[in-house]
Image (tube, rainbow, N blue to C red; front, side, top):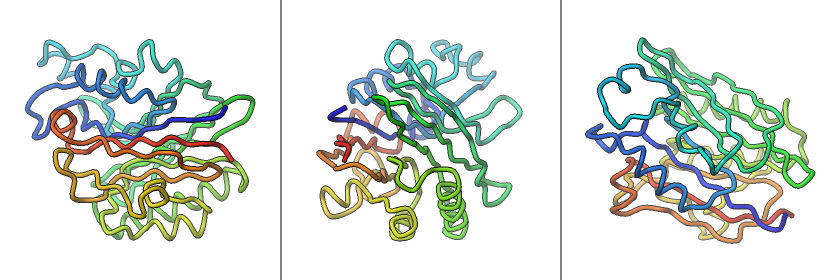
Length: 247
């Protein structure tokens, strides 16, 4: 493998901003244009029995399965939050076989259910560890979740293994990057490529850096924030993509 393209995207449960309409069909086409080998998704609706009844064009399968169909043959879903009519969480979609899956609850309190989804991918005879995360809205909770992430990686993943951590960190003050870099030897791909974190929120005109892609064992070739009118009609977050070259 000479090049790997990955992307991360908070899909807002398949609804436009302010939950005005279902945008899953447009979102699926938009995401497929990224041509990512590995796609990290947050706020994925695994099931919602009322949406299927209320919206004529709502898919009958889980959102990550609908997006992955015929493009990403391998996928995994980690349930974070469960309620009366369904549940949502994180998902990883991959063109490579997924050798192992683990989902870890890192909720800081009962009012915000958060998790990290760990997928070990079999890529060209080697393994790449991929963690899809969605952290909380409050600084204290994010610190606890960062500590849980660090402890998990240190205990479950070899220190020299290629690693990708991507998702919605809600880290608009960039308070967590140094902790992750020092503990896990990872680096923010946008900071490496442009000298500063990517701005990803709100998607029409991004001002805040909420989403991140951290890597270990890769060189960054190219990194892009996918924002503007077309993306703004899909979710309140912009998508991030990066091309990586294994070391």
